[in-house]
Length: 347
Image (cartoon, rainbow, N blue to C red; front, side, top):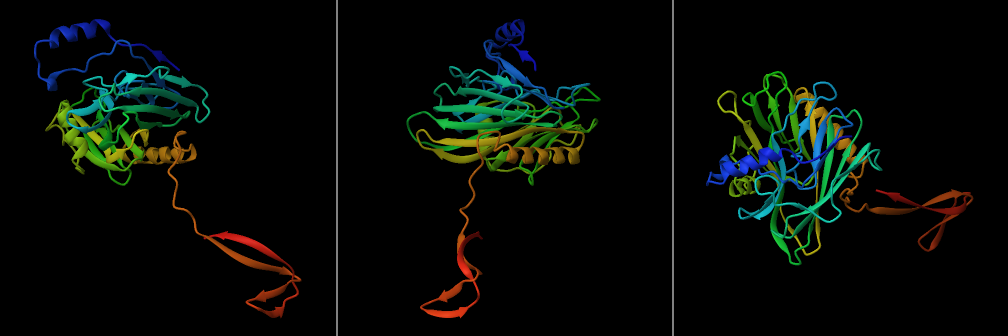
């Protein structure tokens, strides 16, 4: 397991100097939060950076396949939470999330649930009044990690029309280190947005395991750089198409989310995800199905699975040998039964 500290002090200072002159938001690189840390789930064939500020520090960076080349396939990826274009918390452009007291990122190996259990907690600094407790699970030799979120309303009032989702700019490059032969698409049968490299064939996906996907949008570079654009994508429903058809466009990214939902004061919304990699689409799909199996077997990486409908219980008498069987008010027959046995059968 590797522990990483914040990146690029010199780069961060130079970016501030360069961008202080009124550059359009869509042209900005995300600011660096120098105090934040991240850890890496590195027990599987997929290595994923995980942090305590919604993806700003680690940016859910995916390296695959590991060990060996362990190529990097993620430029930026982060959590989105909000109910309007002016009330959107994200871990990318605005660094809206801050680590709570005692919520610093930790990865325990071995974990109680998986080979590596991750934990972090952060909030949106009173933008909406949301606190996020994040759990992650990784297993040796697997091509995925699980990330589960408990999103709690700590505002003291009801919050309505909320969306939870992710922004992902996947620059996938194995054979040719370029982002211009990438494309993005959506697998509706698996609730999974993904990116692929058309030269190398490598695929990287984000699958929702808990939380019904209500929106998916993809587009070119900086399409969703502004809060208003990201929220529009998060709340405007499904676009079920590939983008782009290389080389007609360059860099690609997507936004995927679930909602709308309401949270009363103190109430929790749960979201479950998996970051998955594969050598082609069929491999990605098979690995994502294995992620679903692990999700179910691990009780949702520890956050608990939704309860199903209550089963109808049908009660019946089963006579045992030597019993006199009574039905209604009379003696119906001697069956040579000795006792009555009560049995419950779940229908």
